Length: 408
Image (cartoon, rainbow, N blue to C red; front, side):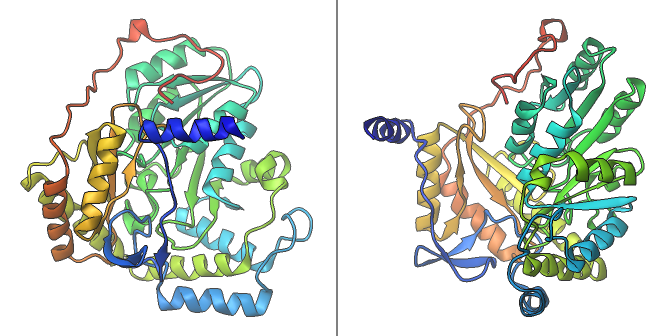
């Protein structure tokens, strides 16, 4: 095991060593972290529903009625009435023909991309897409073209290079580390022009953007134009699991071909029932989405008033880029000592030189808490580096190739 110890030592020396912190109690705006009370500023429980009484009660009732586990994959004996009900409700909420539950967002993205992109096809993937999409591209038999982040010229270059092949454009709706929103209208227009499918991961958009919290696709008025929309139950809906919204033929195809669905045990009934209750709360109280958006503006404005750069964030995800991994960890620890938990994010999650504190706002935060957090963070975050965002010249872009670019 000497090689493992050496690898761990290398991670420590590069400031990339990770450990699990321990949260006591529910995921509220304030938690006990390793026994110390702190303001929680890095949870994806955006609407504060993970510990809502109705969500808890629904999960507990489902455990008593259906049991704790589903017992098998959905294609064996794990397909239960509670799964079908949630799929129906999500389909209505997202205004799609069909909906299909997956075990997690990671399983959904990895399974769908690798299923839709076959040998001889091309996947065009944003360079800052989530790791689950990256791994789906790696699993696919297709070639992958990684286009510069939100760079439409580079994306079109890739589409031209892919001419004659079936293609899939895949992008996050809201990017999980930067908080910016993909240029979906322009992406869809390119997809129409080049006769290409579009898949959007709405993990951080559902419950946070769009009319009634339906997401970035709905905010752009493109619900009838995007072929595949992936969402999660584990963020705004406060539970666990994921779903894909699509047309009926696509859902039937995924049931028959998506390995991450076929070979995974179905979601536990309590998680499904909890998500159902959370979805009902979201639909009946859309003001939660408005509160989340107001809180996000309060934090961004407060940070900027303190002289901090929030990058291109326009959502509840707010990055404070520090630079080096060790510097980001130091800022995280200093903030913790002052009662604010803002997790440091380091490579390979983000590119080298862009380690950051990744802040996540919840609707259950108060404006006063967020303004005070901004003051704390201004005191612990060093002078922020200027991160170059110059796009690569299109003529210097790589051709369609096997594998993924280092930027991914």
